[in-house]
Image (tube, rainbow, N blue to C red):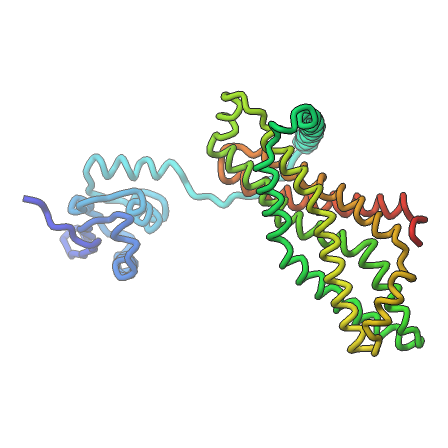
Length: 374
């Protein structure tokens, strides 16, 4: 006959030897996590005196959580009198070996600090090595594509081009439009003080076409598509698809890295132009509302204020932005270890590294081509 499962209970009895606490029912995680049972257990334990005798033999089932509740109530030490069977004693004995102590932060010695610095340097050198290898593999894959274009990964290329380019048009246009509106309103309050409202076209055109349009588009794509590339390749690492590709002799660089790098390098200039146009439209509308500068004057003055060389410069560095974002995304995706924690860490590192690289490259272009289009 099967014994009926009872909730955890604590009964106190008065004997000639003093107070006696008799425990019954199931002291398991399933029973204790119920709110009503948990409150009853806590109230019952508080009602038992510290000198009581404990009888655990009436417990139907005792797991680690139930033993931990009792052990913590006893102050992490054995009570003076306890009646329990061998299994219960063994569980409590194992629990007594792990005392909960406050972990104090220890000061690292000079040797430990040097070792940590060395490990960081070694990891950085390994990442640089893997990056150089990835660039070399990309060049070899591109030469292979030129030698036999009919065997190229064109389906992967078109799919990535659609996901990276077409699906990003809405968010880039919205952000670009709002940035243009904000810039125009901020400049209107300053230029009006000097009676130079007409120069808003020069400032907006040069800032958006030459710098902010490509940079803003690159940052958005780095956060959207760069992280997606890392996550896609990282999931393939977790599910062992990359290992299967190597076993089958499928080149990872040719099938995974090349189509993504090509798609981003082609889509990035187009997205930069699209974002810049949205920002110019937003700035034009805000300038018309805030300063009365009409759209016809804006269209007439913009080509005179911004030489066409600024557009070519923006397109050129957008191509570099796209290639670098794709390489960084693939680099961190291939370095993901087969666990979910590494996947999340790699995706975060990919976004941070991509945005940092984009800003650094933009600064280099600004310094090198400072005399172009000004």
